[in-house]
Length: 104
Image (cartoon, rainbow, N blue to C red; front, side):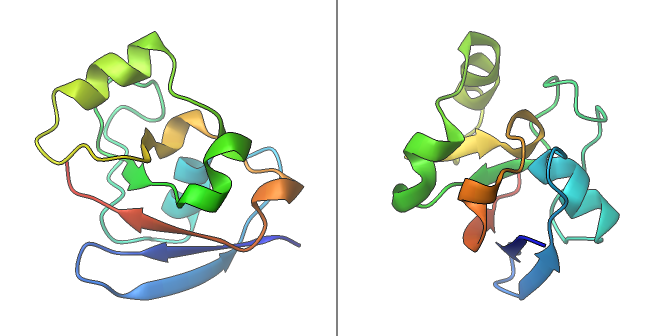
């Protein structure tokens, strides 16, 4: 099974098995990842699942659509590679990726 590593806001690393077809937010919630609150349940409405995708995986993860980008624009800590984990579905191509979790 593919794996993902999450780096929490306090720099703790946690590697988890990542079920294909689930969003990175669902995987994080199912594994109690610190910093992923998912207040809206994955509806792209709250930005409490903010992560940073590493450069090597950005093309694979895709770009934020207009709704996601608008939400990210409201965050003080938006950076290159910022995405909402509720908008990225796990695939084989993302196996082994490490993401940084940011507080909204």
